[in-house]
Length: 112
Length: 114
Picture 1 (cartoon, rainbow over the protein chains, first blue to last red):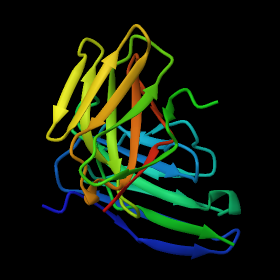
Picture 2: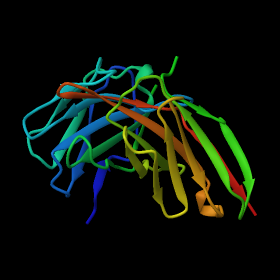
Picture 3: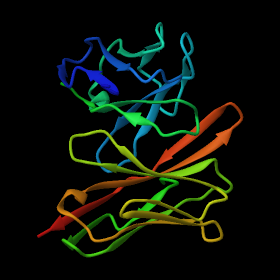
Picture 4: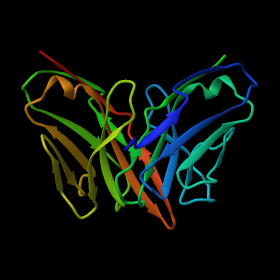
């Protein structure tokens, strides 16, 4: 049971480049989330999904897009990376809105 | 201003000692209040989940308490171990119709030394 797996683990992008972060969970969870974590701040919700084919904006969605074509996968896209998007990105999943959330290992993204 | 505040910002304790971490939140009632442990370079791991009506929840050597009157939660760690060195994050989850607003605190960095 792998839990929540994020790829890649590290990435350096040049300003203006695009990339997609992949999150995969094998627990048949309905809810999936993308967060970013910056030094000295709490995690902030970027986008989330309450089931296959659904997505919704979180607290800081600007500059990001997401897709949930399959229940087990939640993709986070950066169309035109900016230095302000340098951060550690975490994906999480949960069975329901009130149950324990399981987090991936994180993706450290640097935009230069 | 972060609506979930944690104190202290960092703490160093000797192995075997107990410690208590504090979390102040601003909105009541809420859906649930959670404590997570985050090791360096890893994702957070859930320790406890408390609903608004609960006032204590334990998970091994970790005990979370909740005081709805003062809007405070505490995480008490008993007989600390070196592996307890991590950041401890308090999270408030508020039900807003079909959407939950999730507020993460900035975390308390705990170092347990021999």
